[in-house]
Length: 244
Image 1: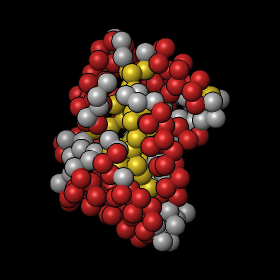
Image 2 (image 1 turned 135 degrees about the vertical axis):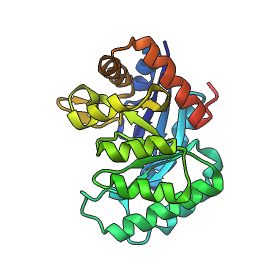
Image 3 (image 1 turned 180 degrees about the horizontal axis):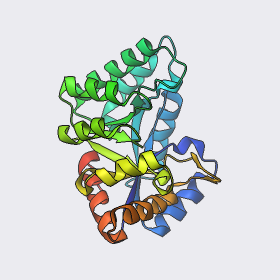
Image 4 (image 1 turned 90 degrees about the vertical axis):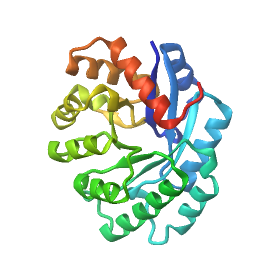
């Protein structure tokens, strides 16, 4: 049984070789290392180079890391677009105290790159689910992952109708908004993730905790772990074009 952690901030792990080794031993077949700005993007590329065919880099610009002048972050992504499997983590977060117009402008730049490069996009959409969806829909982009979705179900249905994916996190064990979303998402549109090193209640996540996500999704949907693992791994391989 193989699983893939579709979203991890590996620059936040101190003993990275140990944690990746534990994940491999437990059946994790790959980890998508997401970036948030130029520094973490560089680290994602470095880890992908040192853990070939296991760590795969995504290059991003997180709304929490936006500067008034984010041009250099965009330039770095464009310069290294051929080295990544996706653009992410990117998006808009209207709960966060950052100028909304600046956030939208940055996401527009990223979506332009996604169109030109035909790369999938890993999206952060907290309290901005509808706005993010409308931006994606307007451009006709379908290779989008709505990361850790916990928004309204009517927007989620639009996301699914468009052909996008949704990722489940370990919060599927207890967060009712996230749980109701995951119940709604069909297996052929679902990915698993950890958002390492995010803390879930009293536990700081690591890539091995994608198995917690797997178990939570299995229980929510009432189907065996093996079936969830097979479907979500297939989805990730196809979406990100992984060579394992």
